Image 1 (cartoon, rainbow, N blue to C red):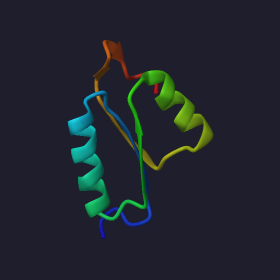
Image 2: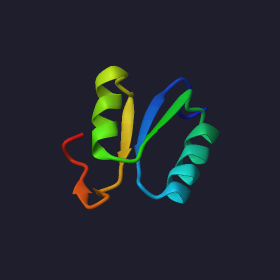
Image 3: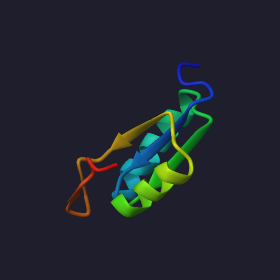
Length: 68
């Protein structure tokens, strides 16, 4: 699989979009797909368990996701 064994953090505040991305990444072989719905939760997640990569929504609840 393309992403076998990888850990991905999805930062998205729209539940349907997050679920779609989760399904797609899991289908591509991701071992762990974590979700964060706020910038604060994303930063906490990255601090405690750094992912291999992250997919960032540009604007999460009106805040820029670039600090993550």
